[in-house]
Image 1 (cartoon, rainbow, N blue to C red):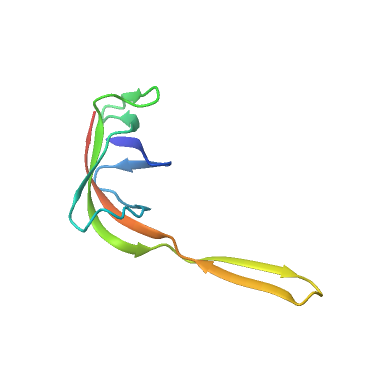
Image 2 (tube, helix red, strand yellow):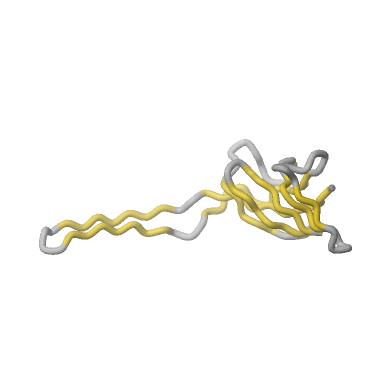
Length: 106
């Protein structure tokens, strides 16, 4: 079973058993169960697809938190102006939460 759900402003495509990284959820700790009820599409095992307008009522994706303290790869921001002795170098690592998809209910 496959689903597309929305968490805050981002959309994720998942199957049961997938491990994904989402934006950090500060109020969670490791082992906690999460429920996402903004499900936009579900594809069942018999290839039947259900679309929401915009969400499917009564459906939800259940997940558990594996690690709440991971960080994404570093993104480098480099500014440069030639012949002006101007260089600026910054880096950013986005905090993430690692979750495992336990169940998809239609």
